[in-house]
Image (cartoon, rainbow, N blue to C red; front, side, top):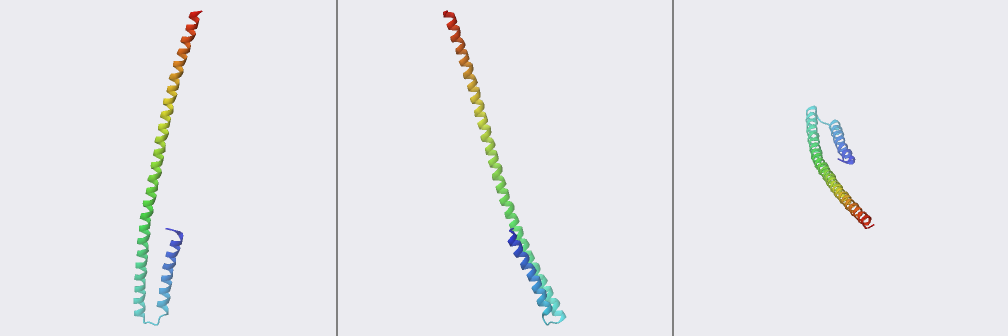
Length: 121
């Protein structure tokens, strides 16, 4: 959750509590009515807190989903990169083997030519 949202949530919660307490204490009511109002205010604050906790929980689940998706994407990209690298290394190894074979064949032909020249002399 963003920092601004947290601050807003806490501000609403603290403001509700302070406003409820102030209104109850300054209202000209009997003790019984005041206790009932305090109980009602406590229930109201409890429901506000429950709603806020539910929203935070939903946002937490959404956040976990986003992080999981991004982690899967990163893992997939790393595996793809590794597979490309292994393919490049295999191609390079084949190229080196081909180059070595060509060089051996070239040296054999060169040797045959040198022998042929020696035989003519």
